[in-house]
Length: 358
Image: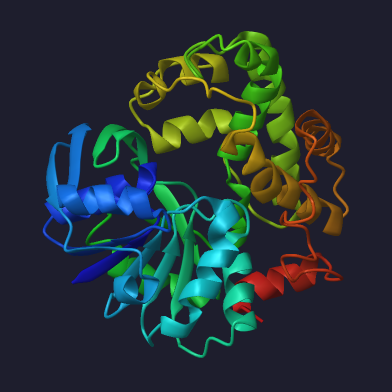
């Protein structure tokens, strides 16, 4: 079986190496030419940590057509901000029957991808799904060499339309047993835990980051900030409840994804999760934990709440404060209802759309 990986960042290199070690024929694509030249010279990916070994990659390319040709499964591991561009790029080359999975979709990634494919005139009958999060906690040491810090025990996945989920899982579960069925993409989208963790930690440590004082992103969590995260998260839970989606709280999700985590409070679980232990703070506030997690996470959750009449003052404040802090308009290319193709829809119409795909 040929599996294509689009995006050679932390997750893409890890997944490519892991799949190759498992014996699959892997093709890897990235837009970064110097990075791909380095990987071509190496011939594959060396993994260390929770996964060990060298995965030989059959095709390392900067041609997206070559990468996905004859692939049964296409795993998109780019940043969420790139989903629209990736969909537009692969639209002419997709083949009937291919499975395309966003790892992760963040919030409503499958809607963005589906809309872009339609706008690009794609006629292929594909199976499109989104994972709630990336399977791995991982960091590239240097290109071609990755430290795998942790592997999640359970990862929710849904297709759009929802009736495609079973077929997608039939293809993925023999490879990744951790993928579990979600009712629809609202579950995977609203279960965007990174959007709850990352902006809060970044915002309350902005001055520390700008002083270049390195800290442990999760291990140095404090009680007061973790309590704020739970208040922030309560608004996400309220949006989910309104749409009939029974979401896990941030505190419960850590134990769901990483079963060996100990502790009762959110603070204890963030500090004690082995997969989080060695993750350091970013070197700048202009990091994907804000520039990605706000427009593709916090903003669409807030917008879905607005469509359903749910008040989300903390989510809205986070968006406004981060726009002012970064001097960036995070709405213009962000996942607003308009940009998701949901503008003018009420709650019932949105639920119909994510279930049936039209």
